[in-house]
Image 1 (cartoon, helix red, strand yellow):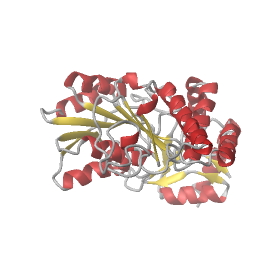
Image 2 (cartoon, helix red, strand yellow):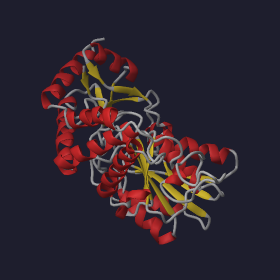
Image 3 (cartoon, rainbow, N blue to C red):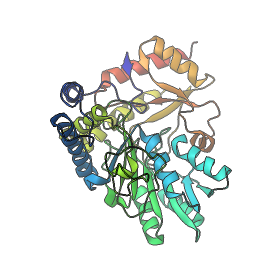
Image 4 (cartoon, rainbow, N blue to C red):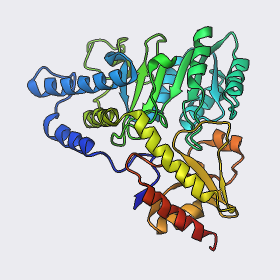
Amino acid sequence: MINFDNAATTFPKPAAVRRAVSVAMRKFGGNSGRGGHELAMLTSAALYSARETAAEFFGAQPENVIFTMNCTHALNMAIKGIMADGGHMIISSMEHNSSARPAAALALKNKISLSAAEVFPENERTVESFRSLIRKDTKAVVCTIAGNVTGQLLPFREIGQLCREHGICFIADGAQACGIIDVKMSDGINILCTSGHKGLYGITGTGMLITDGKFPITPIIQGGTGSGSLSLFQPDILPDSLESGTPNIIGAMSVKAGIEFVRSIGTDKIFRHESALCQKFITLIEKNDDIIVYRSPSAEYVPIVSFNIRGMPSEKTAALLADKGFCLRAGFHCAALAHASLGTENGTVRYAPSVFSTENDTVSLVLQLTKLKNY
């Protein structure tokens, strides 16, 4: 199978990540922060080293790196934690359901008021769209750095500056951007939520919430933290306040190794490689009038291409390609708002390469695509 569904999760994983998982299984069998014996101490040190690696990569403090199950978990913690006392929140029209659903759930229960800013191909119009919705009670802006359907890169740095000017918490969804473009907390981000298993090449079941500490996050999960065990109240120090229960040591070590792998190559080089494959893919399929590509010349994109064959459901296109050995995601990509904005009532097929993808595999995919219109 040739995997072009790397926007869902990257595969294959680097050899260094596979080794890190193996080492963690063999060496780090203690429960971090729970015990003073050698095994627990060794595991605690390993987990802290993973925090340090992530903190350095994103420009944060190690104690402000919270390991989560995935980006969805991180976004729920951030959104519900920041909006715990109510207020007004703005999301974008390109948000993944990981942001849109928890926001909508709070609004449905009248716990918050919610607005959606329209995203345009032009960055200036998008920023103005957010600006026009800001109110006196606006507490947070939630915005994906790059959309997961088309890969459109949003003006997150400008939105971050807008939030700073108004004292608003900026929560950024970095799932489709981290590891592919250079993302730093200094970009105006107060809370960065990201997956560990996509562009950072860790294993599935990993994610992170990284905060600058300026906006307190009310915990939505309470439990054992290894600290303050005699108190019935959740600790208020990070990372303990947001990291209840036994942490995923193996996952954290895989993310550490994945970040080191990305850093060894460089996000610029990864972006250029994957973008070149996307451009090759687009150049080849645009010769076929039966194929629609969902991109605007006015917008910027991370390496994702959404497309459809005219008259063919996206799921059928992906199924036929799967029969030929190619993995692509079809349908609505857990992004109802994005597809509503795009007007793609039947979803799209998504081509998403990784650092391991090749031009030959891309050309082979296009050759199969050109044959599908006969079905």
